[in-house]
Amino acid sequence: MELKILEKSDDEMKLEISGESHTLLNMLKSILLEDERVHTASYDMKHVTISEPVLFIKTENADPIDVIKDAVAVLIAECDEFISVFNKAVE
Image 1: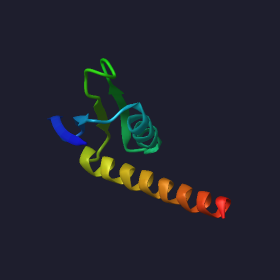
Image 2: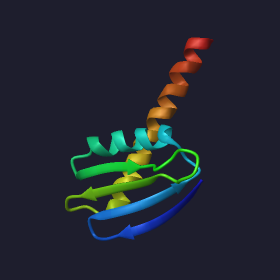
Image 3: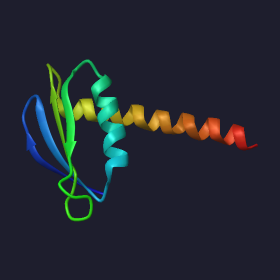
Image 4: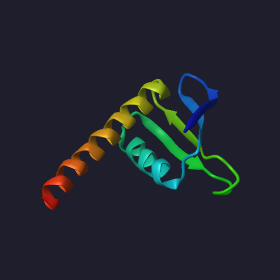
């Protein structure tokens, strides 16, 4: 995975996420949209095999970098919880 900040302002950011697919971007977008600081969160992938996804976020009174970091922390916690529940289920 490679990240490239395409555009950044106080309340908006476009981030290219090379090597990822709809799976990660959909989860991240969903978590971002649950955050009250987020006005808009979306991503675009022109073509799944020849283009890289671009995540767009617009915030209200919050640095988009901080909001994305918080969303990733939530995503990690959800994955950790799933691993724990799954491991108990297969024991």
